[in-house]
Length: 333
Figure (cartoon, rainbow, N blue to C red):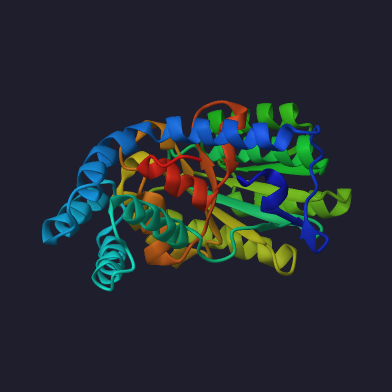
């Protein structure tokens, strides 16, 4: 079954329980897969034609070259691609894989295996659980923060505090405040251009004193090449840790899928500055190179936890490695 919110969150030592109507899970599963498949249409069109031509013809040296080119074009990454192709070539030479359809199925399995790295849950057992959001400008970080708060509040019934630690962009603060109202979340902000660390500190304090379940700290977007701003982000993280031992419990990096291999570089540099526990891949509906999810997971070992496949509230969803791999190459649900 496709992954749902109840399978993403861990609450009191178990997965969260989200009540659904009888018969709804299967309908939702099929619907989510169809939406994901449509969102990855550009990638699949770019990748699929080449894959189908490659995988259903005679398997030979040219097969592996064309497959490698197709995967690299889809931004699966050179290192990850090389490993996948080498594995398939070995299994084909051993006689394990016979025929294009078997090869296609095995490709989907290997891609899903790569995407399924690390712990892809969000652990909400700490009270409050502090989630730090980071990312480059324009990746959809603030929108993701608001949507995550909404799902936590409306689907799990958790009390949430949203903290606007982006003190240099008034529009981001206003946007997050609207999301707080929509989600029924408490909202903490500071004066314009105040120290982001002090706002984060105050937000965690409010979360502790109010008995909130989750505190989500939205930081300012910054380029991964801006050393001073990356140092500021590391400082925000240290300030949160001083306020509450073990926090932040999750640090999620939003990456715009349309940036391709630059997204891999962003993840590398952010991970060097702060301890990234998971990724949110946004704008998957707008790229022909959705394989960046596999490149980051495969090369950095950072699990993808959430994906954005559109602008609607329901278009932020937990990442499902099997569905993603099948949708990527055009396989059935």
